[in-house]
Length: 77
Image (tube, rainbow, N blue to C red; front, top):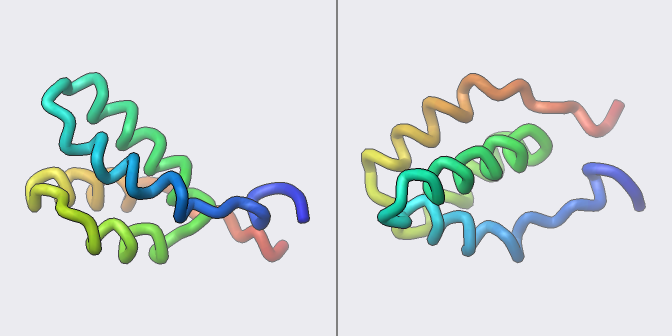
């Protein structure tokens, strides 16, 4: 299996969830950008998984707003 369908985000997601709570804004921004890229391929499943981590509500709202702007890729095409 090659390409996006071969990706498994389960090993990366805990680190991203941790980094979006980092005190440094640049670290948080890069983590959110990584989540945007992940969301492009995983879609709503990623957002659901993020909700299971301890992320501040305001941060989760910001992430959700940013992810709403991301176009999800249909990997089945």
